[in-house]
Amino acid sequence: MRRGLIVLGVLAIAGTAWAYMLPADALLRKMEQKREDQHVFSLVVQGSYTLTGTAAQSLAQKLGRFAEGGELSVPAVATYKMPGRCRIDLNLPAAPRPYAVDRNGVVSGSDEMKDAQTLLQLGCPLLASRGSPEETKLLREWAATSKVDFDVTSLARANNAVAEVIGAGPHDKLKPQIWIDKDELVPLRVILKKGDAFYDLRFDPGVGILDSHPRTLELWQMGTGDGGEQLLARFSAEKIEPNAKVDDKLFQ
Image (tube, rainbow, N blue to C red):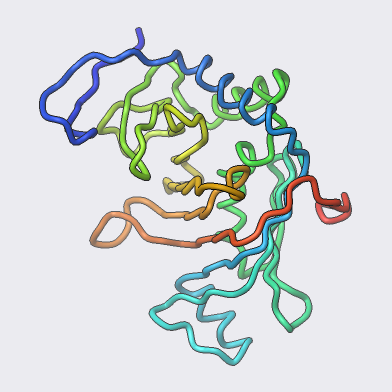
């Protein structure tokens, strides 16, 4: 039985109330329909990538730079070819340049880009979907394999928007779940377990020319540190080129 009870404290409104929510499968179909309507088959996104922790320190040492505050931001490009292929490259003077690739769930890349690989594992199925009915089916299968419970839904707030959450109740943090903007039908968060840890990929959808790609993607590891979470990596978009020519060899 689907749970539709909304704890309005999550929505910054006193009390509780019932609200209509789409079934999880219908919500996924609508999100994919919006993506199909965009007619985007590839993306090249110029921006920056932020490393943290030991990865930041290691790369900073190679570049002769200082990782201030334990973070290092460098120019980067994210490349997508639908369906299911995603890549992040760091634009650095040194060769070979660090990179991460996800090809339909198979990840590879440089040692400094382990967190980027996890970022792509969580985000690529949503970011590199064509939005067709067949793609909706594949996305549903990926979510089910990731143990997202489609019989449980709730509402929450993220990025100043109301999100419909598939797979968790209002206070369930450490459960596989997908957050989708209730009005705009774009992904806002993906929380999944990889190995022994839960990871939280947060999407800031952005506006204007960035509509076909989030303004930022932030990867957090949950259950760590005093605050219970730790920022691992961030990709920030600055310029996007839809339907750019993308060589298949990038994903080999």
